Amino acid sequence: MKKLANPANPAQRDAWLEARLPAVEQVRPGLWSIPVPIPINPLRYVLVYALETPTGVVIIDAGWNTDEAYDALVAGLAVAGYQITDVQAVLVTHIHPDHYGLAGRVREAAGAWIGLHAEDARLLHGRYDDSAINDLVASEHDLLLRCGVPDLTAEELSTASMMIRHMVTMAVPDRLIDDGERLGLPGWDLRAIWTPGHSPGHLCFTDPERRVLFSGDHVLAKITPIVAVHPQSGPNPLADYLDALHAVATLDVAEVLPAHEYRFTDLADRVAYVISHHEDRLTEVETAVRESGGITCWNLASSLTWSRPWETIPPFMRRSANNETLAHLVWLESQGRLTRTKGEPDIWR
Image (cartoon, rainbow, N blue to C red; front, side):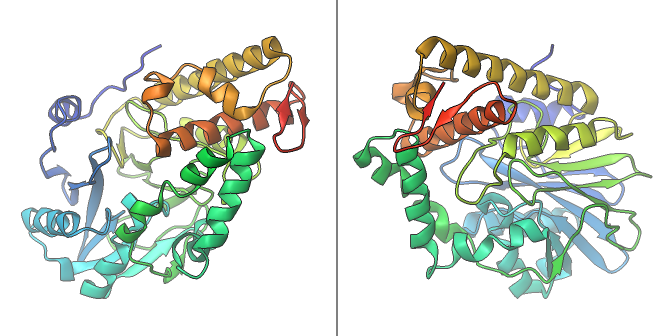
């Protein structure tokens, strides 16, 4: 089964593979793709989509809150013939900083409204409010200890994402978007699809007439998104994610417009690959646990196959790897294929 999706625009695919910023481009009449740089991140950029309406533009996602990102968004809109003040709304697929970070700054500049799913909106205070962040760090630290992470390492990993918090302008959404809701954008029949997993309130958007799917991080062309157990996740995020993959697999779309990498055409095939990837991972996790006779999540994570040797993975990504391993363990537990003896640490058998 193919690991890479078929590109809708080979030039955009080549830019991704060659570590270049792709061009601002008109995807089709009334629809633009604007790459916005992400600092110090292997994803390199987020693809912001600008949808033309009779009175301005609506953007899907916004980028991180840095001057470089803001300037790139402004410049990209100018290529399409618009100013930042023409933005009427920011539809946020989910609250990770590279999607939500600039939304508040765009609202300040343009008076645009911000739309977000309720499941992500309820997490904003705990994630981005200075008065609550210590509680989130403490919860992450406790989770890591239960996973078997040594105390000093858990202290380091629980604060590993603090360096990027300043790349978000805290902005309470003006509108909560429900699953299946029609957005009512002039000239568009845009509809929301709730696709939890990568984030509890992750949204995709589709326009059936144009046969396009704006997939956010839910389905990407090359990599698979992180689906992890953490203090703000659902209890079984991998189950949510797999269900949400099935929910989009049968959509009649000609083109998928993700938030990273490049646009692609073969949605059903890509979804099938991602599901098979997780099935393989679940088998690897289950086999390793059975052979261990009893193991912590942390020790299991360090023994699994990753894209690079475990010792070369930086702290923030090790935390993600641990929590993603935990998501697979929890899914297997929910199916009765593994058991957990709770403690500090939890032992999986």
